[in-house]
Amino acid sequence: MTRHGARLLAFVAAFVLLLGEAQAQQREILVPGDVQLAVMIKTTLIAFNHANATGNYAVLRELASPRFRQTNTPARLGEIFQKQRNRSIDLSPIVVLQPKLLGPARIDKRGLLRLEGFFPSQPEQVYFTLAFEVVGDKWQLFALGVHTAPPKSAVSGADALANVESQAALSGATVRAKVGKR
Image 1: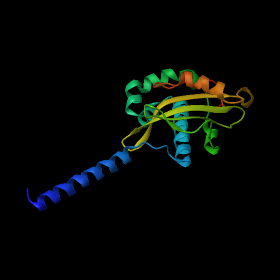
Image 2: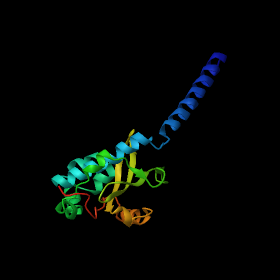
Image 3: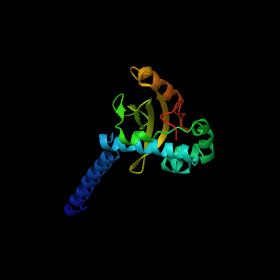
Image 4: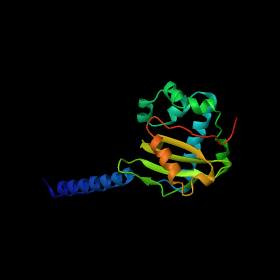
């Protein structure tokens, strides 16, 4: 191999190393900023609210990750949330409120973005636990848990979130009380 060929080979090897490092940094999963988190929380819960209002869970399902869709058909989601739909739960007041996280948003060991918090709504607060996974370059819903309770009943929010956490799964979770009637 000539000197020129050796230099070219060394340059290509260095370039490949740098490119590999850049790609690894791009694959690093980062917690979104506060504005993006608020958008993710609100749009997910409003999609859930619309699905309950119409009885059509197809859009909620299609907005979710492939693993969520594999586990849940629109009909299955309709069965899961039938009680809430029959009770005419209305979560729409959350669109004018800011979510309050009960802890920092975090990436768990499976690479899922975990969010737990509430909306300070009246007469009941809306507690949520959500998990999102990266699909391509976008966060998509992986798990959903929602619970409402009067503000006095959840002094620290821990009990309400424990209830939501026990219900959250790939298949979704139930809303246990109403924020308002439709």
